[in-house]
Image (cartoon, rainbow, N blue to C red; front, top):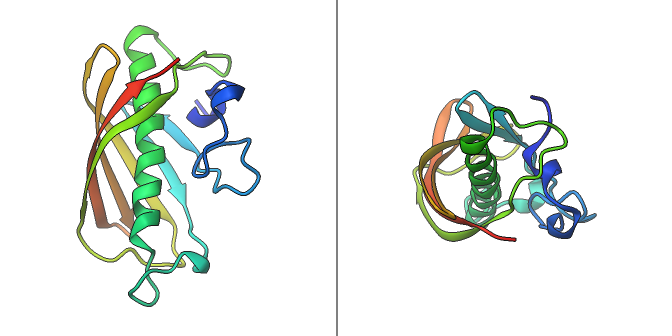
Length: 151
């Protein structure tokens, strides 16, 4: 499916800075289902530089993982109950309950970043997702998220 997960959020829940289509000043991160996992690609602008010259600010890394993680939780949870994720799907928005990040190496600027998500478990509204952020095939950060479905 070529529909971004974030584009399936209800309009009332589409204002997030990182991934909201209704936030004119946001990043508009787009996450996609790819088989049993999720994928997002993002190239940060130089203004998001961190303390190490030429590398991304750690808070931006966390924000990208956060937005991709909640999108992953929403889509993967939906797919546990439905066969496919169609463009008219009514997916439940998820929010972060916990995000544990391991920063493995500085994330470079000026290259496309790849974010991957993988479902670990679902218990009612609680969804656990494993996340990674890579640049040039180098793993820069990994995380585990607990997200909760909201109305």
